Length: 523
Image 1 (cartoon, one colour):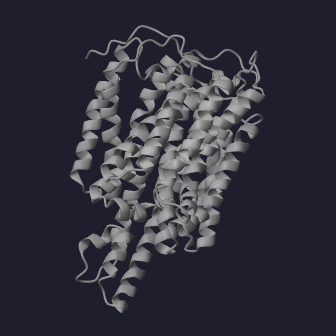
Image 2: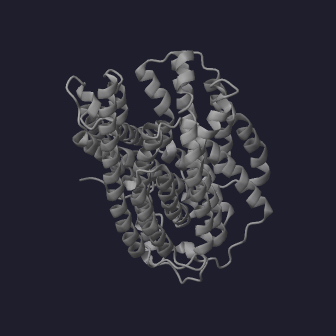
């Protein structure tokens, strides 16, 4: 049974706390927008700065790399120096990095700005979620507040291409970054008025050697996942994964040996915390992989521009927002594990329908049902992870929840993307004279078709289309099976949780996280 259930004696949040949530949600929405806003700007940016292929990859990926690598460090830092203080420092730095990115005069300058945006964004995300858990002590209010936070984070990424498309029609590509400046100004003005300062009462000094150890674990892991998603045959991707494993072992051994670790592995002793974290990670794997194929279908099969594809995806994004807001309300009367499991079953049906539809309207209906069904997983999963940790570890717990989401999406793109690519490569019929690379993706096939005579090109593109749809169908089927399994797992692992806010007895011994002596990590 989780300590999150009890609301006895908890003060209810008032107008100030809800106004503070609105400010934090706005900042969260901006961070999610920044992750996808550059998709439409690539042609404009390329014509202006003329980056090379490697520089272009870093421009696109540096932001996500840095966020994934620094979330845990920033979560622990906020526990020590104060979450509001770190939030405000991060807001100033994020605004400055946004201006630097907007007026970049070279690819290197833009890459540096994207790196800074990622590092400062990592300082904002766990601080915001940790402050929410502190501001909303009542379990029901906290679940609703985290639902709002999750809705902004999940829906913001989908809105990125839509907003960037509207800006690019009137302004230059740098305008995409400048929208962050007024949001950070609002945050800086409102934070002292609306947000409390909080820190971990038992947090000591930050263990500096743990920081590079974690970066040496996280960054190669994310890089390996992205490279495998592009081409599973790239040997350096597996070399990077091996480096991540080696440093990961060293990092875990050091954390177990420290009295005050950067990442408190004692949090995993809580059944609620560890189960919710695993379920959240698995859900993001499936969602990340499916989103890749859905966006490719709209652009490569239907031929929609990124802006029109973004508009189509706005409908399931709205369903995700609605579901994230409704799930905490329903969870006041129904067990969270039951809600998550009940949502994953229709989600499996929706994504299975979308994957084999072959029709855009039917596909989008299936995707909308799928996103709506998965929304309780995100909203309640993050709420359970953040709410089951002690207050002094709120930043670290929030960082773990968000890091699991980042890695889950990256792993989903790599694993399910590789599966779809393998099916595509086996199913496509490539005529003689076409480069072998045409089997790698439907984009490569379309490029190769441009070199063929019209009749041959049309036949080849039809084969590529059928092969992609077959791969999409297989990925959708596998995802549906995994979602059913995840539904069973959720109902089983979270079966002891009562409805949020229900009266509960004292927590089980396995749910109590106590400070203790460091664990001897020697072999």
